[in-house]
Image (cartoon, rainbow, N blue to C red; front, side):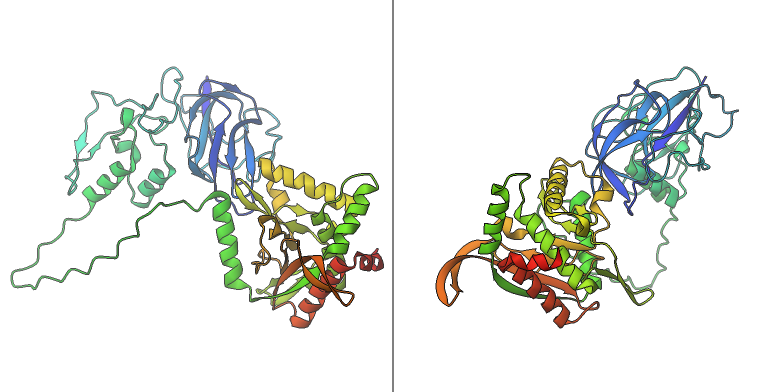
Length: 468
């Protein structure tokens, strides 16, 4: 005897509301163990392998690769041995193995089981394989309609076929779309009494919409002599062109930048600096042997020294309590462009790391960002961001603050330019530094002092010795 348990997409943390299915790791009919990863998903922050807290045989998969799945939507169903399949057993709630799941994602795991909203019962008879239908393909294992079961036709919906209702047997409903389920809930449509028009009886959104239209009250004809109301002007048509969904990393970036512009009164200042001595110092350090030091690591070390002098910029604003919160540690984020879009990995406690330690950590996080293996915790919690857009061959920019931080330093490309050096015109390696700050945490004097100190360290790296 077995009980079919439905495993839904858990809350992956940090306010994420859904994920995109990248790759299925199991097939229908496979035997899975407790905490075995069953699907790889991409959230707005990282790629995540999702482990299933149940052990048994996979009886169904919901969603194709590339589909967007909201939190709480079903991923798979698992036939767990040792349960009751006649509906007389207790409601299905916890893990199938004593001791529970040991692999914890936010929202489920070793915590005490919580009551489920509904109970999934298998169809009578032997357990059958089911799987979500691909577009245009059949749905195997959907509940069959008994030919002897009476059907009831409702009033015809305007402009569409007559929806047919039929009482479905117990078992998984032939519905794979969470949007269809939500639409049915909003309009009180009983999916078990609805016959789907999709392959093998799959219930589609159009089926639910026809059922809603069929139950809507008929329009009342106007009385004789009543003036006909003037129809409103048609709404402007949407512009034509390619539509790209704002989801995943691109959607998360859009939300964060829009919120930053709405909430933070930012201001920017910039300065050109002679980076010739900084590059010479890096060359000398790398020639001395040991781990190589990157230019980004040198700039990160300069930022931590500057924040030690101007701690009001390592802060966040709590408008609910009308307080500025100055943070004790510098969790330094740095912008990294990847195939998935712009991400900002965070170096924890950057102020405690050596120059070599910063270089190694930045290199490690950059590689993880490019391969999509960064954990969500490695992309959150930053207190200050360093943005090296010079790698794109541009000189300057006005960075948008990474909400809820208070400031960001932007670095343009380092290129040879004419420069007055020691009273004479010379060709030097010049860089533009841009600084954007939250005007609520400080005034221009503090921001200017921070940027000037950074420029001094770039021009004369020996200035850093004062802070070592």
